[in-house]
Length: 113
Image 1 (cartoon, rainbow, N blue to C red):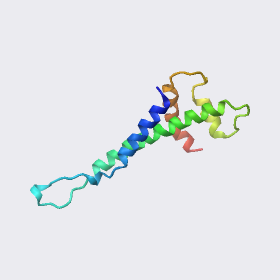
Image 2: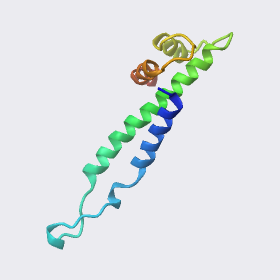
Image 3: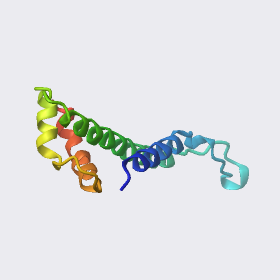
Image 4: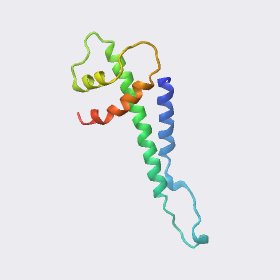
């Protein structure tokens, strides 16, 4: 997985989900009703947006942790300590799929810190 492509794909999904669901058009009851609720579509868009945002945050977290591991004096902050312990180690060039998956699962824990 190329991390940058993954992040940009998730950002594209976020942009797509940002379009108002109510921009759609529906004819109801042969034109007798004037309003149609697009609430269910908006709810599905919101769920997709949350997933995409989680992917963006996970990519950012992986990048930040990898960068902070390069420092000679890594920060002594609880969030870094938790993330550093949870994410796969190693800074070599390799697929980061497992890192992003672990980071996605870690987001809720970090939100509580």
